[in-house]
Image (cartoon, rainbow, N blue to C red):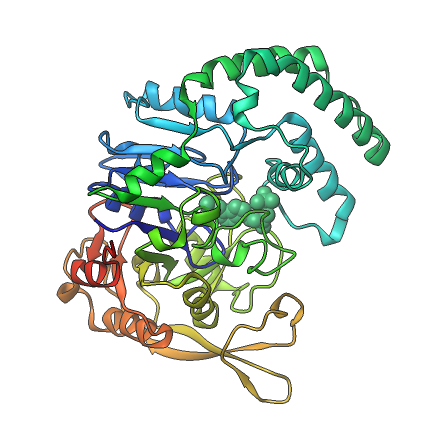
Length: 436
Ligand code: IMO
Ligand code: MG
């Protein structure tokens, strides 16, 4: 079977977890390759809603090995809580492996995230406040703590003590912050280190073997393409690489091992936090989408900004991810509207049209979205299981999206449930073919 990357094609929250859960079924391994507990992935199975921040959504398939790899930043307290939560729900984590090269989020990272956002005032990014940016900053500055060292009993105390002393000093000088209690922090984090130790190992070899194996690997993206540190709408981005290429850097697998990339998008657009959003609807359409789509953050509970589908953004996403096919979701949310719109270009003030996403989009407030208007569908589609049973106008919408982004649709989703997915198996098979 092919090695496939699942990637968010928009600004995150595209319901990647559901498609990961579906495709994980026949894979040997699911690997989460980037980000941290800024992610919130919900998967509904039967009547049960599972929420994950760090653990790959593949954990619901008991035969699948689940890996949190090198590119992830891990808040140990959050991970311990998540593991215990799964145990409480009767799920096993014996197949969970965590990379010793993943970096640790420590309390000063969360503090710095909060202090830095406060300092930015009106220009704040609207981060999730989980310490993600500061943890990646320390990694890049080569002063981070990796999980392998964190769980080593002979290294834990000396490394933690010196890191805490240095950070207490710099945070006091930079922001006038109160120092963190070294003793209390050591006590708390020693428990986490003890708890996580059995899960921690060198995962790159493990992933390599699985990627060469029969069943293949699913690489689970977090966040979305437009939140990528290099290729997103900088500076309103996260500090990692959610794009498909991040799956190589974040795991240690070479690009020739990736057989296919499935982008996940909603039938509309959402974004949390600040930053450019050309098709945002601050009106009754935005509210309609928010209420019907339950567009409130899994991680922070913040209401998400909502607007029409933007295919300028999606085409860019197809380009930078080398996307093989698209998983288009939340089709049910658009039911009931007289008409639906798709953004196909942006208009410059002089009237000229832009059809490719400009890299300076974050400071091009003057650009106006150009829409194609399609007839809506009144029918509730949440019970539809076959493409042929969809209302004609919903089919028209999906077809037009595929035409505009020039790749086929691999799945269409009509609700959060596992079974609420129309799968074009032939598209997935032919576009994500094993190459070795
Ligand atoms: P999933 O995996 C949506 C956004 C934040 C903020 C910016 C930077 O659920 O799709 P950070 O805390 O990462 O420094 O915040 O990125 N953001 C997300 N938005 N879904 C996510 O993850 C996100 N992870 C980060 O809202 O605008
Ligand atoms: Mg989210």
